[in-house]
Image (cartoon, rainbow, N blue to C red; front, side):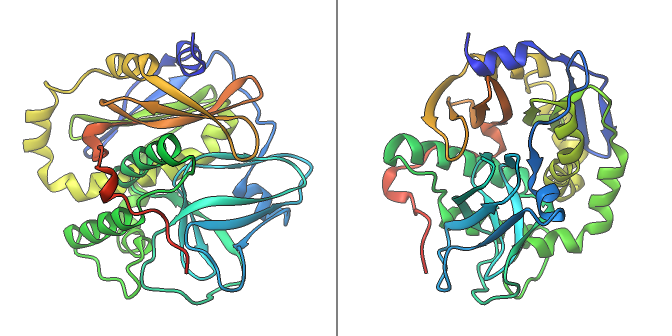
Length: 328
């Protein structure tokens, strides 16, 4: 039995919650659990973690994290880091050991700025929108398999942001996805407020307009409750964009979309390639035509799993189309 399969067999489905065109089905554990690590936001609030550019000149696909805590620090796939020379997102989930300085793989989500706004980065209250995370996850998996690195396709991420901003009619002087979240902050916050996490919730499946978009699973309910708002914001931005098509999309897609149980079974059955992780554990990258995503396995468990339907926007590309992360 694979680590991902084992983790998924340990959860049950909770009662579906709905708001507007977004549905969330909780994934529940038997009992509540407390994390044996700090989230990045927690570590930064305590002054124990600092994220900076790797040097004065900087490097677009890489940042430097100094963990001065006595515990590991958890960084979430797609989590947005704001400040320094340009805003970035995490390419995948990491568990950075205590008292460790580590270069971390990131992607730029603010194409039009390359100048210091702050000395260090701060963890934001959001993750990259879910369609973009799905495509990024697929590229990172391809990058690990083919080149042994954790790069995204930076050009594709910028294209995804440009399309999103155009579709949502958001202007940004620096092409920052943060400006889309700010523009729709009221609506995004309504989505966040509409969903509640229970004491034993360790994850969720997300459905927009009747289509399953993705799933998030954590090792303990403690982590889930802290990070679920970031993830709801990720899916909410896509839901807001697609809200105007709710009636037509839901009626045409819901019957063709697999059920939550079937989606979980697809994820559990998918092949996963294993790579030594940066920091603790191993990266398990899903290798499937139906599912994109991956998991971080560490400390004898899956610490975090994210899995997206390929219909979310992920897909394969020819090698010649790949644009690795760039350095400036």
